[in-house]
Image (cartoon, rainbow, N blue to C red; front, side):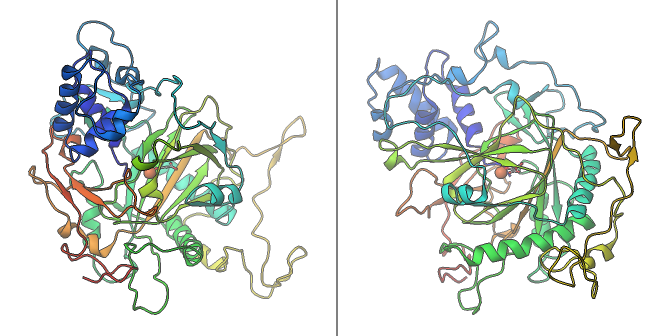
Length: 514
Ligand SMILES: O=C(O)CCC(=O)C(=O)O
Ligand SMILES: [Fe+2]
């Protein structure tokens, strides 16, 4: 789901001469000015490098103003010896615990697979002149998250037993998940976490099931096997999450390209019809900076992201539009996501912010509050919870509830007492894993048949133009080739501005109808 701006930057960097150094911002500018074409951007930068020693005649205005400071090479680990890409030839990574052998990409099987984090390292912290820089800010409460980001944070979102049950279900399932792989330079790299994709039985709107086909394009733009349907506890969690998301959306500004029928009378209803899930084991597994691809989500999506297990930080950083680059800098916000918390990335988050789960130096182990099997998969369990997620036994009064219909959840099985008197439960193993589930709505007006194909013949991907915003809003999106991630790293130059009207898309909140 990740937008691969970073990959494009690295691809451009790979085409530059070893001596030519450009900052990440300069490469991004070149990409934007060359309509996303890697080759054209590299050619343009090569011309700039050869035509001047320090004089940037052909660079766009925004780049010319900035001092060249960040060496692209500094994003890569130093060359071991010889050629400029020698340092990328690292040995294949160890396969994790009982993970099945990853499926090979088209012609990738003969190539070594590399953990992305062994190639990338953070940009150097060299001081830049320009607008003031602020230290990262920890947003430790839902109020702070709402104040600084287009997200809301909701603690204890699910009944605790359901959160535990879903954690165990996904943790067990994750043993069959894969690492996303794509081509970078001349080799296949893999994401430093496991991932999988799920489609809901119905899309909540009509009988159209073509979105299931879209779900098959999940794996780096290549058609894959049909995704699994939501496991039963995920379905129950989704119903609770949908209610919370709709309550939050009703309080917020809507954007005109958001999906919804303006004539429907009531506010459009958000439904999840697919979910992507990630498993991060230990403190070092991570996901790099990205915004989610909008190919099947369309503009201004709302994405509901559930965290289970070990607490990790979720980082958010605005992409400052080019016109503001000289007056302000983006700030990194870190949000600690404990077990059973929901982060809603509201409309405009994918257009204006990038997000990541950074590696950490340490993490706290998560100790589930309930042993496995307290609630085996049982569709009846859901009926014990009311619409607020409270455990409900009709007619039963409890000492600590003013609502007589709300009772305490059933007690966990008794814990054993150790020889030291400490309470232990042999059935509960602490875990160093975090499970993330992002519930998403694949829009009917972005169904697979409507997605333009590139010259390579595969569906393109949709990206927002994050760098230019008019009145704070991004209304420019483009379709680009995604084949570079799969065809031995070779894509085509396909690039097309999305035109909602001529492409027959909608209905949208702002009134556009197909
Ligand atoms: O694990 C998370 O919270 C973020 C995952 C994510 O950004 C993604 O799957 O696109
Ligand atoms: Fe994401």
